[in-house]
Length: 314
Image 1 (spheres, rainbow, N blue to C red):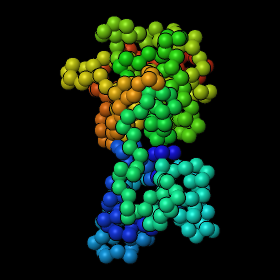
Image 2 (image 1 turned 90 degrees about the vertical axis):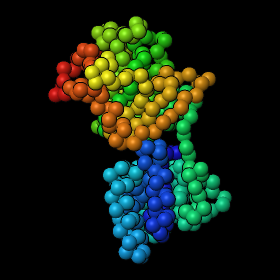
Image 3 (image 1 turned 180 degrees about the vertical axis):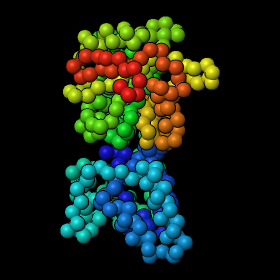
Image 4 (image 1 turned 120 degrees about the horizontal axis):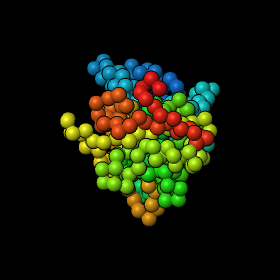
């Protein structure tokens, strides 16, 4: 997965300079995450840092706490064989089964394109996805880290349509692929879709969507549900509702062209850190003070049945 990186816990703590340089390249705001590989990755970094002078050791310890708070290092369920007694050997085995974006280590292997030497690489050697083709597979790949780890996942697009059987088919297919990932890897997450009211005409109200989606089952995986809200921008205080986002409490993405696949075109991506993503996400709290909800939200189930949501308790 091109957003998951293996970083040698012994090599990253060779010096404070090394640690600061490497850790700064990761996070949800970068679109790149460090695999918690092994599960005691933090402890192994801490152990390696004990060899440094006291000031640098304390810097790394403090930065580790900050990295944990920022969710820079995440569990991906990789197997780690302690009997090999070698981190790099484990990383290579996992890389053969399911390639990392790169392996970053003190060792180097010229024949391996995604093994980077800790002392020689820079950020240009890492995957930097800021433009993607608007194909379903490309978009889903760009969304994957948020779909896998977000607890509250919100697709925000003022002009998104999913209710028309033929015209919106590709948008439903994109959402279906996203929901499949959530269902498989992150089943406890809640999923939401938010759009803007018909101030320009042409945007349907929730009642219309409820009527249409009842006859369009199949794009929500079995056992899942998605909540849909229609909002108008609030004038006091004025909060604009124009940009398109995929938002979670851990981070987000701003999408230049939204969620309608068009393979002949590209769209720009801007990564958001946790604080920025949460601030925007709060605008879509049903009982909040952000955008104004036009009418109660709609919950849609995998079998096509629907219901209205009156408040948070629902």
